[in-house]
Image (cartoon, rainbow, N blue to C red; front, side, top):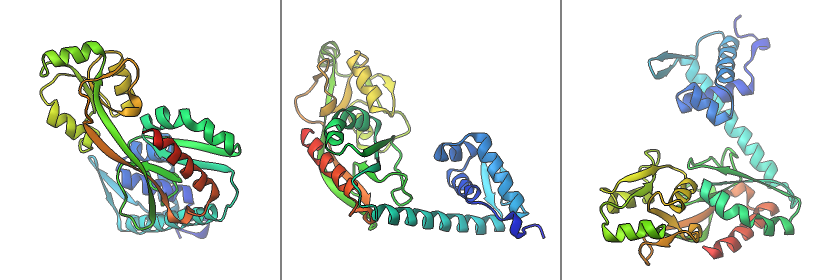
Length: 289
């Protein structure tokens, strides 16, 4: 009697439940869905009320699913995949060269490289609506978190298509004063680098290999923040060539690191004209790398 037809769970509740389990916390689900902590909590309470029984228990920082919770989670994931598949199908059948196209990129590449080059795209295709999703987290193209992603490695997922855009060349650079101090005493020169949130990327590994003993004056996952700090004289930074502003000079003339750049999209969208237009624009932009 508890789970009657009038009390079936809604999609928002199921989606929130899946995000909560996958992130492991209320705050993680709130960030993933762009909701408040209170909204996540309320949706989970309503979902459990609709199901007529608990879906999970919390012990310390751990979440344990009940048997019913496991069933509901499987159903939520299946519905999410079906919804994403429908969205990809509809997008793939939209043959207009207009509408929204979401690009996922890092903050620096999106804001400091792509955004200044948008006029050439929008002058040619004025009915496009470009949206940037920026950050270091890898978004799901299958779930349509973005239509196209700029990535630093070719994906292995057979559902995704990757188009090479070129290579990013990184230089160690700083203001003339910081570079002079580094050349005088390489072990004491200050650096700016990445925080602990991205321990395994090549840039962080380069820092570990070449500047492990140097003082670090700023740590940030934001390459834009690192660039601005280096321009202000905070320390040396490992930056791609497109960020070498007039205030910065290379500490060494040779490239310190290279990273491949790929445009990645789901195969269901390969025939969409606005996607092809943006891909062509990206290739033109990346000739400046």
